[in-house]
Image (cartoon, rainbow, N blue to C red; front, top):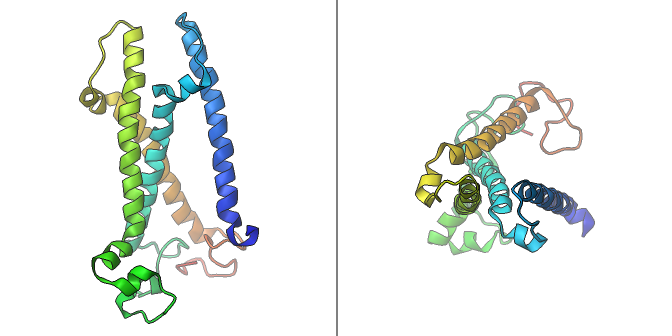
Length: 216
């Protein structure tokens, strides 16, 4: 089990540890703010239901899923010569093959089913990331509104509507500050994999591969 699933297990453990750290630090930060406003500290359960926690969480998830959905789609059509993250320009690779011509009995059942099921399955990875992005985007807006209004009420301003918050500079600042970092990290991965290597990683070209050889 460990040999076959070690990568996902370790990543999920790192996620769980980081998420627990976010909750712990966020809870203390939230209560520090409440004390500054002469309010009683919140219990952990109360904090987890707060806009402070929800906005911070889904603001980040939103950018991650946007990054992955955009990357999956862009690598279908665009190329980067020499990058381990790109298909070879002008070539036809196995990922481009029409699954309707597959004769492998072990192929996933949508391939054998065909029709609309196969059409959806062909794009299921980008669809899944796009849906996760949209869900996170909506949760960022709705839970962020709660945090936004809590701050407004603390300063004597009336509560804002969801539309007002979703069209505010604050909401888009929260989004763009994360989006730009995700696209920068992707660009760095694409470009650095042209020149740099990591022996044993499928995200790298072989160490002895020529600099301008494309693909892993």
